[in-house]
Image (cartoon, rainbow over the protein chains, first blue to last red):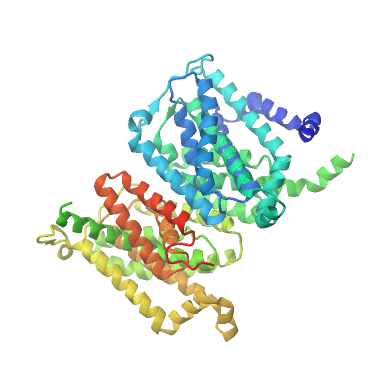
Length: 317
Length: 285
């Protein structure tokens, strides 16, 4: 593991993870309400999972909520919440391995729509056929009391911030690794990768299952923050919101999904409170303007492009 | 199963499937040929349904609403092509995001104009007569007939008229069309206008069966995508076949258990995608 040692020894590269942790714990609760912040963090884990597949591999999915739902309803198992969190990762991972060989065969519309059908199937299973367990439309409350008492809001908040930071750290290490390079190579030319001797299906399957684990951990965190889950959260229509939130921030950049989810959910909440039913026109207009103005790079891409000359100066010193 | 019940369910399925095909036709042509996902196309479906509602409220007339919706959406579709023209040649995700934004804006306008609640639309009394023996409303058969007639008209339009031939030629080979000396913008304009008008027709016919509400456009998105993928991208006949297959699957499974029908529709799409990724009647390239 020579590469990993090199990556980890250069700890100054990871100073931003630490800054984000401190920011989320001490400064962010002053700006936005804490329940909203926990919501944003849970959804941004899903956005990171989405951009793992879309940013590196170029596979756009319209069914991320399938994994989100799996992770959420794992939290209802009558076990210790911490064990449930770990089980959520494993369940998402295993489910992705189970369905992955069919789904990741092709990109484009094939991948997007097979994921969508997965999401629809899971939504209606949750809504009706597993109603006794999930609570269906009305939802169910869950009391999260184990080794750590998650009924206290402070504990929940710290736990979600730590989980998010770990996911962010994982994503950052992943984006510097050879694995990410292989995914990018598959995006550019898959047949060429096969000629080089790589089993591309296996690489894509691994990426897909990692994304499944991340997404279902996000779902588990959503239940952890609310102690409640209703099937309406996983309505297949909302799948496009994940795409929108990630694209808003910029899927290619590291902070993009976090910032995109933050902007999207925050504006939605604020505008929903201020204008009542008029939030959609503003979100829609914002979306079109930002995507057109930044040429698909999102907010982060735009900032990076603007700061590029200055960063270059800083790096050279 | 009781044979009369079987016929009822089958007619229901055909009715839903043909409406799906009507709505999906424009989307199929734009997605298959122009390579843009035009989610704002679904707005015309909602608009058609709401115009029918308005006309049945104001003048107590159902058919005027369908006619007005057809004409209004024909014009608006042509206008939307002029706005969306700059999306040609961009990546498919880019078009998805932009048109998603337009869908949001349009949904908001619908909410502002017509309000949030479900609207009930009553079909005209002469179409509400109950057929003896079958014990079902004539309206469902009327819907199926209107859809079939409009598809027949479309086929004749594509085969016999100059405008239709331009569109077919554009779908087949747009560079060749340009070489002959015809502006391909005419063809794209016609595709958008006709597709939107047909979506409005589908929405108008669907309004009495399902009550119009602001999010009906978003709810329809998944089904129309399933339709065009099952039938084959960019194929007119394929869209009809896809719509009928999904409509029948929807109706038969909904007869067994209402919540089963979306699952069966999307599982059908999944299986067809896995077995034939280019769709039932799509060309294998």
